[in-house]
Length: 166
Image 1 (cartoon, rainbow, N blue to C red):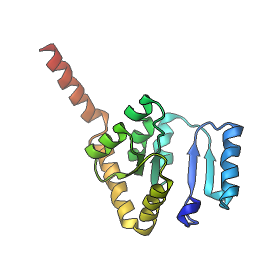
Image 2: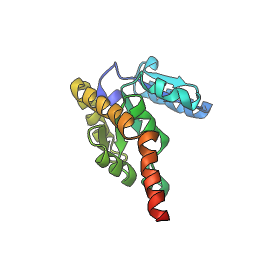
Image 3: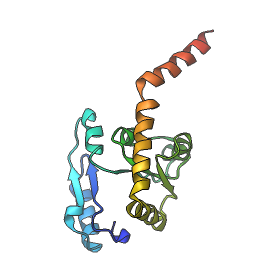
């Protein structure tokens, strides 16, 4: 956030946060001379409320560190929640997230794990081109409503079950 040079950038962290983790972030805020109001610690909420919270934000961070195979090949729940909140997504390049973005182009951007410079460029691109951010947000919501929903997915599931039974 500090490297973007944009004071209007905010980060919301949703979920249970230990005192140790909170202090880690508070120290980063101080070290990078950020305004403490730029980082919000939001308590854990019921799953049904997550999309509403996401909807008051613009970008969802799907930052994964592929230190174990599971992080390389899985998609976490946030990848499915962000589109429900009309969030553009900043993905870390893992096998699963690369495939997801290829299947749903135009909903976000991707950077190499650990490449802070590339991440800053992507965020600054959104800051400097709000129309691109808007396009990605609209595309993400469209994916959520037209593709990533039970009404669509159940048809795929039923078709696969029928194929197996026949």
